[in-house]
Image (cartoon, rainbow, N blue to C red; front, top):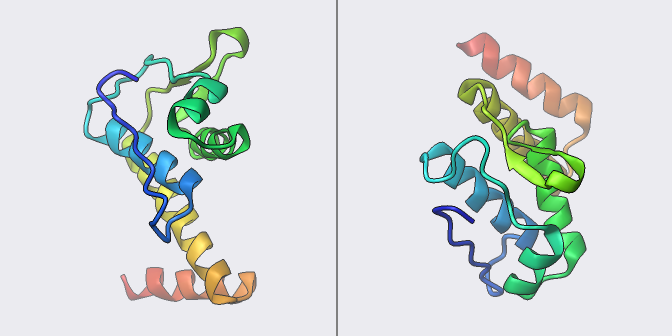
Length: 121
């Protein structure tokens, strides 16, 4: 991948898909991976990293949902030009959702916590 060296730490408490996702986002945000860059096919990256294809597919799916990449069929998955503020907000929202799920906080309570934080300005 252009300008990006992805590594997965098997001893990390962070799930492998999250490590892949976070490293791709870091490359996009620091400019080492620019809009139009084609990401490796899921199976190729999975093989290179010693991961299951579903693990990499999940990372790509979450990147697409957050607006960082788009899948173009046979053309593969490419980095999108993003509104970085929106992309960062989507990433923060996803991280928050992951955190509250791990903590066992109900979705309605999690939303109320966000509303309270936004009200505090």
